[in-house]
Length: 363
Image (cartoon, rainbow, N blue to C red; front, side, top):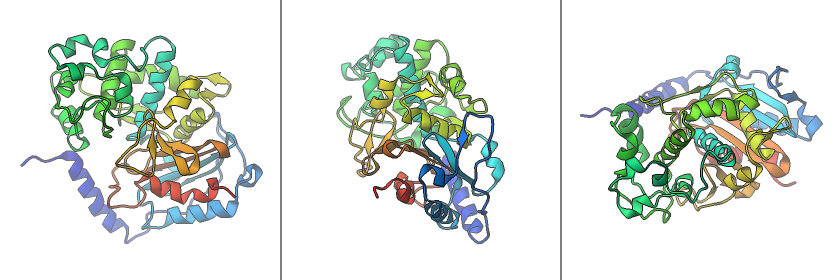
């Protein structure tokens, strides 16, 4: 019998959670942000037009044992100021990097936008094989037609399901991981059908590394994290040092909020243009229909939330930077990464959108 480590982790977490639900595991910690030398201005909710009562009701919902079970941190940014911040289990979680899971994909999108603007990456119509021809020798013509846009919209056509991806890539450790992915069968011709998974952003990460001559993490350190003042982070990597472009990033909650604010401000942070403004618009605009999530749209590794006129990152277990431009809001939730969204409430983006509705809905 083959033992899948991730499934074992999920089963163990579900078992432990059933025990935890019989005891208090969330706590009503302070909600007023502490002023730190980290680039955030602080304000009271009422000073920026937010209802303290609405925030208190959301906080009470997060504190329930049967709702948002994995939640660790909730932050609210309004008009570029941090106005609400609470840690539901341990206040020390403020200063710990947490696993962002698939929110990593959104950061990968931003890094592609930066690299393209600097002339370090070609446009989205470039094929993957034009950037790594050695790995494409002998591939069928259809696979040689996979473009960067296909990767950015989950439409490569390569049949690599997420239930197998991590085990095959990071445990089995194929000798040539790029060719290993490209040898997978096609479920559709490239560009024809959306299929959400980790393989496409990982291939984009390999393309970034090849063109940049450095890992995605190394590029992020200077091109993105440096300007944002993000210093305490971790980016998991494969056996050859490649950054896990789909799900490997760990950030502190305030730094995830910075990323959301950066996108809200058209790629600028404290007056410095970090991500090109046109890429911020394109990445957070509807590009494809995610048939597995009909409530939302999908951009370039960002989820579109039409009912709020906004967009969000979405990491497994409940890692969200939900941005509502017309309200100048950034709403952040950080959660235990191994909470199964099919079993424990809070792991689906719709849960968070519904929770925060009082803050972004029209009057």
